[in-house]
Length: 371
Image (tube, rainbow, N blue to C red; front, side, top):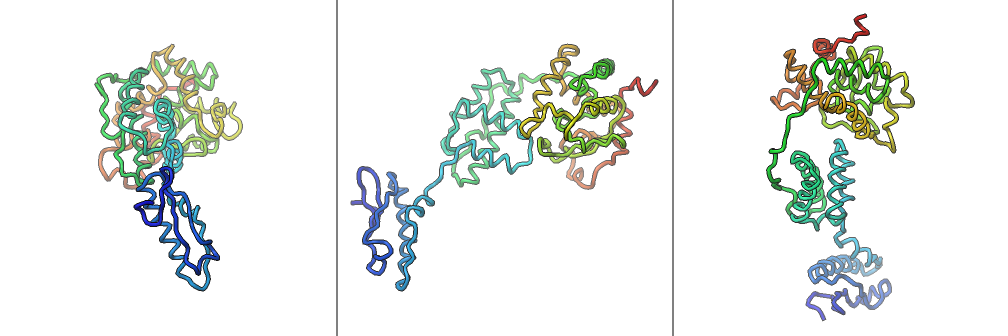
């Protein structure tokens, strides 16, 4: 027997067990017996649901249409959802750069497993932090990984209606921020030397230096350019999302002029471009492999200058500051999220002609254009 109406318990499992009314015997048979669960609370909920549906079916005394009892029970049971599954759903809906959350996700699954999202605990989150710390990751990197995973789990808890605290919320990282170091920047002489070497070499990887250095773009924004986004006649590039790479922020969609060494480098890269993309070598399996391009570029930059490709972007912002470019325009040029005032989001922003004026002011002189 069982304390739950219309159920019996056998070998630790609860079964729905009910005699069928005479007028419904032809459709259902004399008895209904179906396994529910080993958990009494779950079994009680399933039994209530099944009774509600069956009694609704039996109310019609003239024509009984049988319901699929097994399907009713299965559909009412909570579905387990693995972290990897809900993460794919989240990433498909969010227009963000997918590389950071995917890196964080793969690292976390490596140490905590790909389990049902409801099973992860605070200890799993702490274990992840210890794992990244032992691998030598800086605290800023660890915080970015935590934020990526926290966003995924927030989405999972909301979608699955889980009344559970996010294990990554308010997670403390020991000595956070104490290991930060200011990223180095290029001098004017280093930029000129690097640009000249890149153009003389004809190497597509090295030509990324003037393309990045004279536009302030992120590396993925240049490597993932489609040929249709390049207007060499007008001397413009259109940074916008496409099938192989998204943009980091909403403000990242923009149009920028090609000035000096950037235009010279673009002309050289276009000579060997084929297909639909500027750097087809780094477009594989429907995605932009910008990390591979970054690694290849940094081998040279670190060897000759002790700096990286991202240092070019920092340098470009400094160069714009030096010519007193308005902060709002600097943010627009670099695709940075502006944090000044609410009004910065109004209107269409500065036009390309205004942007080109400041590009001309900061441009490293191209010897080929001077001669």
